[in-house]
Image (cartoon, rainbow, N blue to C red; front, side, top):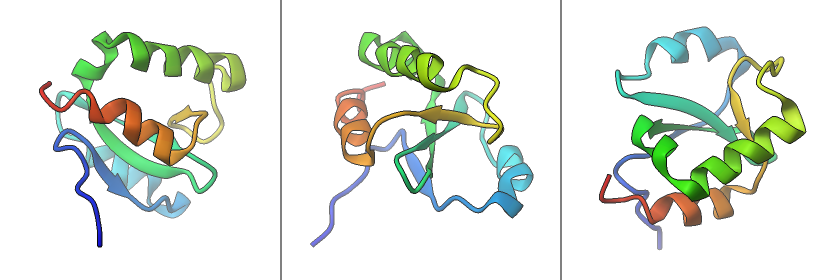
Length: 93
């Protein structure tokens, strides 16, 4: 049995050799973030930046990694489950 990801989130496995190609695959109005120990890539709506709970995640990311992270993408320091739980509340965006 599976579950459905919110429509505003797309997930892809992280592969460092495909990083630049994936950057080009982010549609206008979206951004890519990396989440969890396995660095799962999610493409999320820019509207998430207006959500206080998502801004809390960004503050944690800044504290832990800064915004000049060597991975080249925005890394969110939480588990994939927590990220999905928080962002599932943004479905109507």
